[in-house]
Structures are given as structure tokens and as C-alpha cells.
Amino acid sequence: MKRKMIVMAMATILMTGLNACKTTTVERVDTDSVQDLSGNWNDTDSRLVSSRMVSDMMSRKWLTNYQVKKGANPVLIVGAVRNLSHEHINTRTFISDLERELINSGEVEFVASSKERGEIRAERQDQANNASMGTQNVAGEETGADFMLKGQINTIFDAAGDTQVKYYQIDLTLISLKDNRKVWLGQKKIKKVLETGRFR
Amino acid sequence: MHKLYTLGLLVLFLSGCASYSNSFQQIESLLVQQKPQEALVELEKKPASGRDRLLYLLDKAMLQRMSGLFAESNTTFEEAKKLIASLRATSLVEQAGAVTINDSAMSYEGEDFEQVLIHVYEALNYIALGQLDEARVEALQVDERLKQLSEGEDNIKEDAFSRYLAGLVYEAEHELDEAMIAYRKAYEAYQYESEALPKLLKKDLLRLTYQLGLMDEFVKYKKEFDMDDSFIEDAIGRGEVVVLLHAGLAPIKRSTSVFVNADDGVPVRISLPVYQSRKLAFSSARLTVGTTSVDLEVADDIDAIARASLESHKAAMTARLIARAIAKAAISKQAEKQGGEIAGFLADVAALATETADTRSWLTLPKRIYLSRLPMDDGEYQASLSLLGQQGEVIQNVNLGLITVRSGEKTFVEKTVVALPRLQ
View: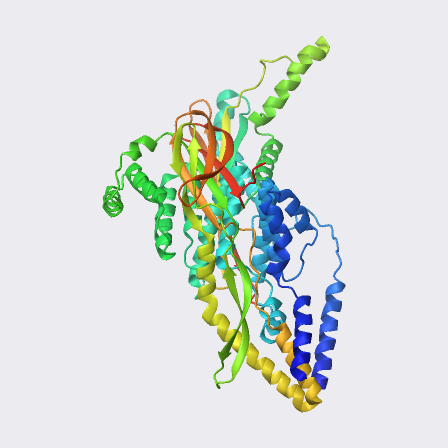
């Protein structure tokens, strides 16, 4: 009995000792590396989905049709991407990922969103009052967008025992502002299987 | 002589290990004085990191939202959710502690109803922030959580208010079909919890079945509720004021000792937690918007749900406690045999001193959530709440300020009244 007690005491000391030497370690990793921690929507998903969907969008007919007909690149604006999923997804990073992919493709022109426009207009107003004539940008010369990109993120979630299946579906729609025509529909699906441990 | 010693030592030990619910007094008194910010400062002085971490997070999130820090509150709730997910896996070390010492040796994982209420309050925070899509995420999560819970054997199967709130969120998002499903589930859940069906829900069921053209169901509800349906046309398309009143504080767990007979007829002493309700200084409330008045209804009786939840665990808990008492007795017998009388005596003292009930619970929850919905025309209105006594006399008026109503939209107003505000 005595020996058992000593063993237990030593085990306790050992365990508290181990807890105490947990220190913070920092390791820098490439932002392109895949790191799945909780199985939730993360930066990798946002990046992969935006780049795949934009490259799909750029390879479809609506683009060449427009370019041939108008002799210029179409002008786009990104509208709302609604999060209708089970998770609190930061749609702003997803939208900026989309914008970056679109602009860098060089095939489309891009205009500022309605929120950004307000700030630009205020600046232009300020220029009209304070900037020298040669450097002023006058109002009324904004480029109107031809298409608006809208989207939503949906999830289906299933769990049994220690296994969970997460299914994400991201739908993007490109709508012509002139006549409400939908010129492109994109869809990307992600499926993740999670196994959770029984003991900690 | 022996007995006297034991008693003295016992008192010494007991005062040393004050249970969780006792340490809450200061925060509670600040809440009663309507000073949630100061209560938050007080709580943050002693951040818990170990087994009571979840309780600390829950109380912190609640005090943050009472102080109007809704975004911060949600960050804290998210941390709590992550913690719960990680605690779902069993810890062998803690289990061993719970078998030999007491239940407080286990990390607090939250009662089922408490876990559901995390989603409820997070959704309300998002509503307060004007982020309905994010509140909708919580509505989906609560559905998922309840699905998981209902698969467990001694878990709760439904939670009425969270279903009802989900319906409200869907309605605010103009998703009537989703709202209908949520209200149907709320209807079933109120029956499961054997709580009275709020009149509000009856009206919603009638209105939505009518709006969605589910005429068979409409007729069924109309017959069952025996209600006049003239309110429907009055409500459709108009704006609506939704008022939630979080009243009082949830019941507090106390430890009681009882002697029960083990299988071999030997009486053993075990400590069980029992809930002690906290008083509410008013018995009903009335909302006045402009010139229209309506009574609030109890939408969530947390006090009753907490009691029912404890009652449902009681059998399993008692069995576990008896097993532990027997194990402790065996240890002291062993100690006496091998280490003499003093060792046996010491083991006895240790066994008794460590035998306290697990009195941990989320204490900053309200006792009840009252709800009212009032269709209104476009415009700005002065709104106030009247807190009423037992005879319906006005005890206190609470000003809700100026409310803007826009047609087809919902205006949410929340108020927390822990105790009656003192008249100056």
C-alpha cells in the first residue's frame, strides 16, 4: 500500500512537471501549405475554391462572347457572398481572394464595391475643393460594371459516433447588370471526413 | 476522542474547499446592483484555467453581453464551444479522480441545456450586431447539436426556446419554409418539456401555415388551439417589434448529504447537488410600444429546465456516488490494516472531507426568458416595459428608448433585469 502511494505521488509530481514545461513555440510556414486543424473552413479552402472557380469562369464562353462582341474586357463587381452554412465563415477573406484571382487573370476589369465607392467619392469631392486643376479627378466619369458576381456557401453536415462528414457547396453566379441574365454558374464542392478521438 | 478529532478536522477541511457556487456571491451582488461592467472586471481578476475553465468562459461571455460587448462575447462563446468539443473525449486521469475523490475532479462540460443556450445567446449577440446571416449559422448549429444530443441515452432530446428563436431568425431572413419547420419543432419541444405552449407560438403556427398555404395543417392547429384568426391579416407584411426580457438568475446548486444503504445494507454518506431557486422580484411583464400594450410570455423557463435536467441525472449520479463511497471505505479499511489505526483514521477523514457534491453550474443565466412580439406600422415609437407584481400592479417601469419599425422587418429589443432597479 505504502509503495503504491509513493508511486502515485511520484506520478502526480511528474504530471504537474510535464504540464509546467509547455512553452509557446512559433514556426513560420508557407501560406500555401495545407494545415487542417479542426476540419472547419480555413484559409486553404478559401484559396483553393476561389482560384478553381475563377479559372473555370475565365475558361467559359461568356467571356469570349463578350470580348468579341464589345471588343473590350467586361467590367465586374463582386456583390454579396452569403454564408448559409453551419460555420461562422469569414466571407470577406473569401471575397478578397476572389477579387485578387479575377484582377490577376487580366481578362476582366474591376470596379470598386459600393462600400469602397463612397470613400472614393468623398476623396474626389475633396480633390475638387483642394487639389490643383491639373491633378483633379472629376466626378461623373466612373465606369459602370457589366456583371455582378454573387454567391453563397452552403453546408451539409452529418455525424455518427466519432466520425463526421462535412460537405461544403459554394455556388457563384455571374449576373448581367443590363438584363439580369445569368451568364455563368460555378459550383465547387469540398468534402471532409473527420475522426475525433475518444480519449484525451 | 476519535470522533471529536474527526469533526474538528472536517470543519477545517470544509472551510478550505468552498464550493464553486459560494465563490459567486460578489459577482451576483454586482449584478443585482445593475453593474455588469464591474462584475466583468471582478470575474476577469480570477481567470480559471483548469477544470472550471468552461464556467469561467460562459460567465465571462454572459457578463460581456450584459455590458453591451456583443462581438467580444461571441469570441468568448466560440472559445467555450471549442473547449466543449475537446472535452467530449474522455480523460482517463480525470475519470480516476472522479472515481476516488469527487465529481469536481472532472472538467466541467456543461449540462446539455447549457450547451444549447450557448448557441441561443450567441445568436442573440449576432442579432444585436445586425448580422442575421451569422445568427442563422447558430440556428443551424443548434439543430445539429440537438440531433447529436438526442442520439445519446440520457441526454435531452429537444429544447423549445432554441427552436423558437431559430424560427424567428429564419422569419427575419424571410425564409418562411425554414421558419415553419423550426416552429413545428418548437411546438413538439414545448410538449416534450411539458411546458405550456406560448400563445405566441400558436399564433406563429397559424400565421405561417396560412402564409405557406398549408391549409390542412392550418385547420388542424385552428381546431386544436381554438383561436380567432383575425390577427393573421393584421400581421402579414407589417413590421414587428420583438422584445426579449432576460429576468432574474438561474438556480444555484447546493450540496446536501444523505445516507443511503449500499447493496450490502451498510449505510454510506453521499453528497448530492440540489438546486436552490433564486427569487424573481416581479411575476409578469407588459410591453408598451407607442400606445399599444401587450403582455410578455415565458418563452424559456431555465429554472424548471435546470431542475428537470438534474432530476434526470439523479439515478445515475446516486449509483456513481455510492460506488465511490464504497471504494473510499475499502481504501480506509486497507489503510487501517496495513498502516495501523492512525492511517485508517486519516484515510477516513480524507474520504469525508473530499466528499462534496459537484455544485458547478452556469450561474449568470437568467431564471426565465420572457418574449413578446407586436406587429406595428412604419415609424418611430417610444417603448417601455412594465414589471408587474402578483396582483398585476406595476412595480417598476423600464424605459426601452425610441424604436424604429420598418414594414416587413423585425426590430429586436433585449433587456436584462437581474433584480429590480432601485428607485433613486
